[in-house]
Amino acid sequence: MSSSNTSISYVIVADNVWDGLADAPLGPQEILVENGVITDMGTSVNHPPGADVLEFKDHTVTPGFIDCHIHTTLLEGVFDEVYTETVSQKTLFSLSALSILLGNGFTTVRDVGCFDPDFITVDLRNYIKQGTVIGPRLLVAPHLLSARGGHGDATALVGYQFHPMEFQVADGEAAIIKAVREDIRGGADWIKFAATGGFSTPSDNPNQTTYSQDEINILVSTALDLGVYCSPHAYGDEGIQRAVTAGVRSVEHGNLATTATLSMMESKGTFMVPTQWTILTKAENANNPQYWTNRSPWQHQKFQEYAPQLIAAAKNLAASNVTIAYGTDAGTFAFQDNVMEFQALVQYGCTPLRALKAATSVAADLLNQPNLGVLAVGKTADIVAMQGNPFQDISATAKVDFIMKGGIVYAQSVPRLTALLKTITQPEGVMLIPPPSGPAAKGSS
Ligand SMILES: [Zn+2]
Image (cartoon, rainbow, N blue to C red):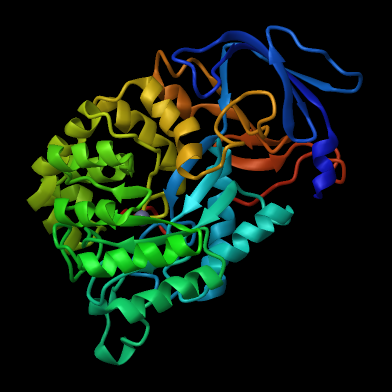
């Protein structure tokens, strides 16, 4: 593979196109893609000689999806394995995870934290950009900055002699400044931090506020001075409000936000990345012991405590005007299920339009990527096609069978992405990627 792949031209002829912005699909459209960019779009466009014409019937063509919250290095189950896996295991596992995400139609993803002191996701981002690793375009927050004992500190799981492996734990202003600058020196696109406790960690609680206002202020301002946005992991009101006050661009999860906090986010223009599918599935199953057989007991106990609040908050979010960006926490559950967030958003009261915009134009806005998330002349050719019409049935989003990223076509062979269909250096043919192996999804968040 090389950047020369994108010199192939395509004309996409589709009976139904949605551009990422309009209130409804545009109906039949043709899209001309040259050198990885959309160069024309309308009811009919010029068909240059040599261009491949790709026809889609009974499909909806949309911008490639964007997931703003994944953890590609997690072996589908968080804290129980991060201490025993090597850097190379985490890296190699990520290769199949990234293929699966791209195969689901996600052409861009933001990785919001690798549980390893190394900068694995920065390297993956760079190799994907170069074309030597197959996967969605990556933006990365390398680590989860956390107060000691907070959501990024899993050392309560191991003996005290292992506590030096605290990942990116930082208490107090000086330590926080150092941690932020180290992450940015290491290649961060974003800074992620834990403003509250969470569900998956053993020693904290989602309603606890783990950083003071002063600590969050210095964290966010240190990052902004270097031109890097912050997004906190936050569930409870106080932690969300402190982070929003400090000027974060988005809030991850936010699933215990009351209407007062939602109003504050609305007025400040803060994006919410609610990761609802994983949270609400666990809340719905809080009193189903079978569901928790292979999941952590402390997580089960917390979901039993918070289930009614989580379900109420999801409905409040849908009823609010908070800007929702699509994010899933994939990696804490099976990567192939990252597409389920669409259905969870709609099930809890969002319109299909709001859910679809969350994963396209709104996500691109959050990620400050003006060339992504929209189908229009001059935009990057990240284009997917799915069977059916997601405006009529949102589950069509789980039926993506055509993926173009930056003008390169990837082929989907059910149930996994298996083939790179066409490049100049790899002429028409099939390049098999073995399916990933590993323990069954355990789920966490
Ligand atoms: Zn996460």
